[in-house]
Image 1 (cartoon, one colour):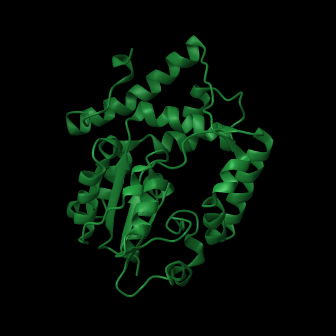
Image 2 (tube, rainbow, N blue to C red):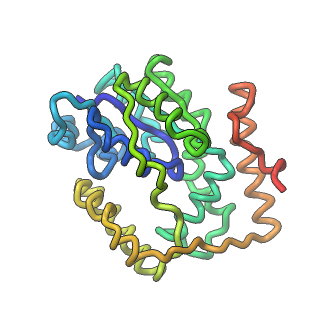
Length: 276
């Protein structure tokens, strides 16, 4: 039986969080960190899903961290049917910071360098991911409020211990900490060869669709893979005035929707027009 689901957009420290969860003796997370069962792998059936957690010990809570669950329209209903007592954890990042990080990161993985920021924001997956309020409300329609914990990415950098206390308390497990958790993982990089990096990403997605999650997870965890594909540099980004203006208007709406629903923005979030 799977016990918890960690949702949230990409570029919200999900890989770091997966390492933290995996290192907790009371928790078990698949090597791939997610199975995508409640989104793109649902047709494989519950027996297949349960098999992904077969290595868990009897005293461990089982769970996964999946970006697509956050925005997939059918994921909440499917998850609720499977386990109505799922503990749901959501991590959200300042929309502007997350979009810029995701755009830079995705350019190293699959985006052609000619895709503008505005075009990127209009992609279906980007639009779905950025619908913070809509996605949270969809999950709230299927799970009790006590089962859903919404956390803020910026709080991780301020005080990791305090942030983790909220997570462990929500899961009702003992506090656990390792000093190596101070180190972040998978920052955006420049591909050594764009064609090779895009090919590697396409192959990994194909393998995941075929159910080879463990193999993909094991391969990604190897430091030599990252060294082969990426340089230790970030991609330079330049924008036309029109592209930048259109993009900021799209991003601004994420803040507007949040403030309309909740009354104020989380600490650490800054609207685009407040930045210098």
